[in-house]
Length: 119
Image (cartoon, rainbow, N blue to C red):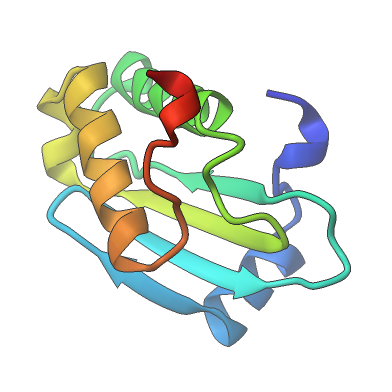
């Protein structure tokens, strides 16, 4: 995933936390902030040390980035997303994480359903 799709600065994270809205399930909390002037979405990742060692945390972040890369066309553009992983995400494989992220984004009305093009 290109760096233009990532949120890196603390001020940008804080803006999403303070002005955005959140949706959650057991594995993830996602904060979303509408940004009309952006041409694409951006994501920021937060995986606490409570979740596991560096290998586990990096694996979770890799899976989340992979999900957003694969579903780029389906995810609502013009938004900033901050994804916070919760403890149950540590024991999940990619398919479970994909399902969980899809669920929480659907609850937040930020992802379109699978189109007929993919079939």
